[in-house]
Structure formats: structure tokens, C-alpha cells
Image (cartoon, rainbow, N blue to C red; front, top):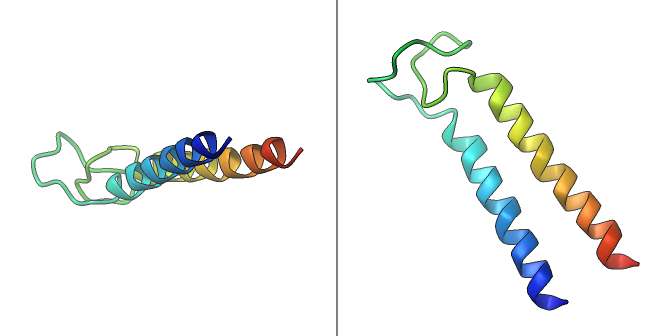
Length: 68
């Protein structure tokens, strides 16, 4: 059970890092993101929000499943 918790927390951390990485400016990007600058991801605000929502959803779902 402890290994599952560690795995879930690692997944949440990886998704959160990916969300932050989408905001980083990237000069050689093909086109600017929706915020107006060239970022790692051209759908920066949308992809960041989606990744953060997924991380939070995994946290709450796993907390409820592991608690029962």
C-alpha cells in the first residue's frame, strides 16, 4: 500500500512539473503561445490548467480510494 502512495505522489509531481514547464519561454518555438510569447507549448494557458486539474484530480481521487 505504501508503494502505491509513493507512485501516486511521483505521478502528481511529474504532472505538476510538466505544467510548470509549459510556461517556460522557448525562443526557438515555431509560434507564440496564447499569452503572446514563445513558450515551450503553444497552448500554454490551456495546457497548464489541464495538467494542474489532472494533478489535483489524481490527488483527491487517490486520497478517497486509499482512505477506504
